[in-house]
Length: 284
Image (cartoon, rainbow, N blue to C red; front, top):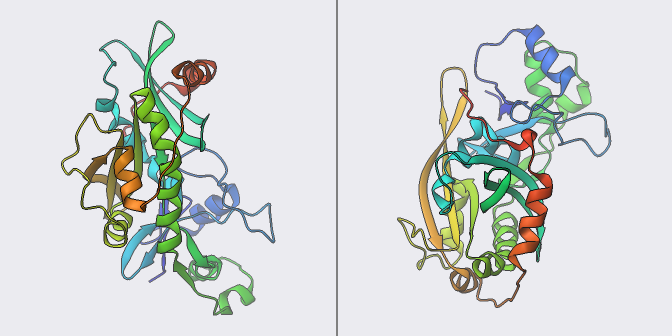
């Protein structure tokens, strides 16, 4: 059984034909974005790796943030945090908005008559890997009968999960951003796999987080578990937590200060909202 669970969004355990895999690898398209996979080999910039999920300790672990975009579930699961949203408003998904401390991956925005009236920030985080997944990928393709470099197949280079660095990095980033959202009276959502939530809970001070979450808290954490089906994998929302800016500082035992006028965020959102950003429900 391959340690690569998903390649270009397609489950490796399902019965697949060789021509289909040849087309997937040649096309290099991400099933969740409809664009070319952005994870490329450093030694071959024109080759997309395409690994979305791998097995670690017998569990499927997401290693690409774009994997969380399946069927727009993560955005739909944040609608309740738009407290100014009303029936009839449009929902838009806008990417990469700059705030103090860096950029936020996505914003879910509510707009009425073309004007943004509310928003929530959404950060995606999956596990970073150590080593290289490439040999496992190539061994899977060889098992299908595809031609691959024998050196890749024979490679004994392993890969692992960088739990500590991943968890620390995202919490530090949140520490720099959550005070901005608190000053704006808006919500910031961290979307992660449940396994990463479990790790962070064991390594950091998470005892003060609210579960179930409180709507008034600034930071919300949505943990998704992975369900293995006959033909594919699906993500489902599991536990939800929340805290405020002080709670993030308590988890890291740090202090920070950041602020930005609400009008600055609204201007960036307004400039990016268009028919292309309109959130559409997926039947996938």
